[in-house]
Image 1 (cartoon, rainbow, N blue to C red):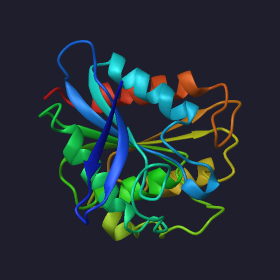
Image 2 (image 1 turned 90 degrees about the horizontal axis):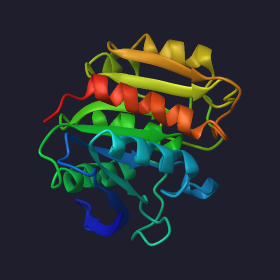
Image 3 (image 1 turned 45 degrees about the horizontal axis):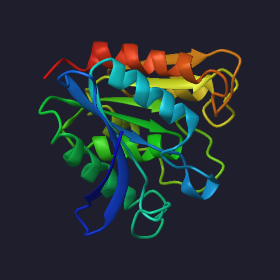
Image 4 (image 1 turned 90 degrees about the vertical axis):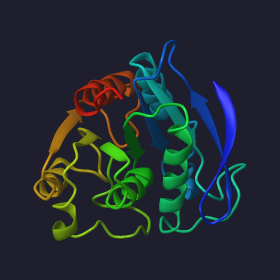
Length: 215
């Protein structure tokens, strides 16, 4: 695991950690964390589990802290300017692998990842974990169905069975606007996926292998 820093287009320096596979990278991935004002950072157990799973499957993986979080420059921007953070992370991780890029977002990070991917063709697929259908904090709104229908890349919508912020009915409604969406529910857990981190990570890993062709 290598600690790194990388720039955003608006001149900030963000901290991240890069994990490379044992052999040549087949593709790359970026991990986006939960709401920083609710304790979110790159170091949450679910993101650690996903990072390890993807690296084991041959991905170069960059986990990073959004602006204003821990040692990243800048201030929290309510999920709006954070799309630039994701774009910067995608550019940095693609220095490690010229192939396609998967973006994984959890909670707040899922909202930001979806909005960034709409305008970024470098993103080959999305895995959105605990997507905030019913957020407990202010977030930019989910893009309208007309915009979501233009996203023709594979999307995984994964939540805990008892996720109060990302209920199954809401995911089904969201998936109806995404041409290539699939839903996975992890039984016996909630928004934080406690004690189901490895199970959730395995679902993300299997999706990644199906959805992201080797570069």
